[in-house]
Image 1 (tube, rainbow, N blue to C red):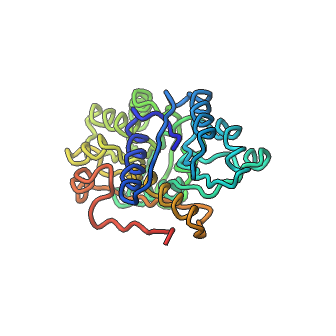
Image 2 (cartoon, rainbow, N blue to C red):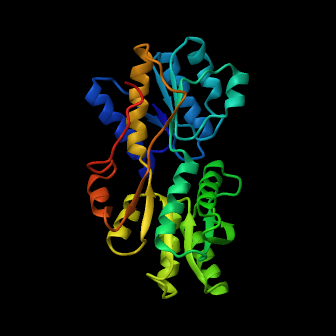
Image 3 (cartoon, rainbow, N blue to C red):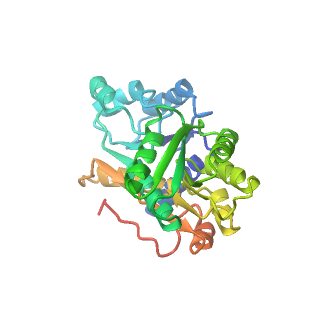
Length: 298
């Protein structure tokens, strides 16, 4: 398993899910990680070392959409399964390099955004104004989440503006503060990032609008869940990196045993509100009890 930095709680949960599933299934799992989210060459070098060792399956969560392709060429040529996790590898570049991916496991970002839209609709009234604070301009995951949200609220809520805050908590807080000052009629904020949601909620609290302006963000980090339990954010869309890791190991096992593996496995998401936040927090990073997890590898 070649993954992004383990000191990041999101990717740490992903590795834990993979290891727990491997232990459960009696599978030997080796995990190596990038030093940081931009460590393209370092992560690639770690993959290359694993390729020369020869493993039965490779799970890759790349730092970019192309940085691991060169190392994966001999893996693909040997017919060894490759499971692409979380960040999608560029399919056109993979095809050009001769790399065949067995499956992709991760969140459908438009679905996650749509879940955020539904949560917001439950909190607001028809015609209310909302603002969107996205991640990096051009980031495909952020844009897909924003699109999913916008499509789900179209004709019901009015999206007054969309700004980018680079997945940065402080920048998101500053952007929200500016928007609240310019438009006191704003009733909600949607963001594709858990950290940014926390920053936006801080801006809402400091503006004296707690309980009057709803903040909904995707990720469902531990801090987000704690904030919901404490009465801060009213809702979040929890995705499950823990479950992604577990499903990637299941995909490897299925592929090695000759089973047909779907080309894409969408990890389900959960809308967390005050009602189920404590259960979600208690189970974190695993899904809470009663959460249905389909098994596409049976």
